[in-house]
Length: 135
Image 1: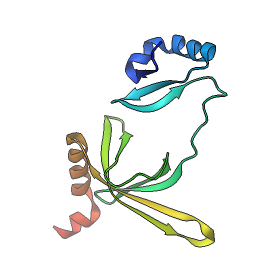
Image 2: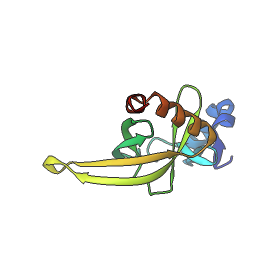
Image 3: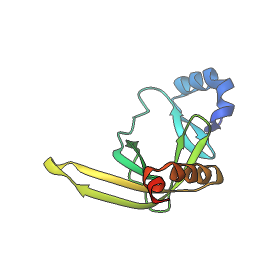
Image 4: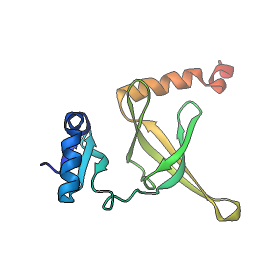
């Protein structure tokens, strides 16, 4: 059995993949666009990543708070699924701030990295309240 499968191709074989992982102890990667997005393996061998809390800052005054597997570097891409497609963003700036009681705040500034995401960002910017008042 292969060590990784594209997530779409794996759907039809999910039961076989899970049985193989349980029987052999191997961890099998599920990929999307060549990047691992999940793994299947025996419960004892797969440790979830806690990650870091971050606020992703998108063009058009939009933001999203959530968990990232780690702190992304400038130039890396971040992918996010929406109801229509997968958005691909490039990290343009990363900011850390130390807040009260030792908490840290992580802000990740993003720019669109593909045509779909560029159109989406342009739409967001046209809908932005600050943009409308400037016209």
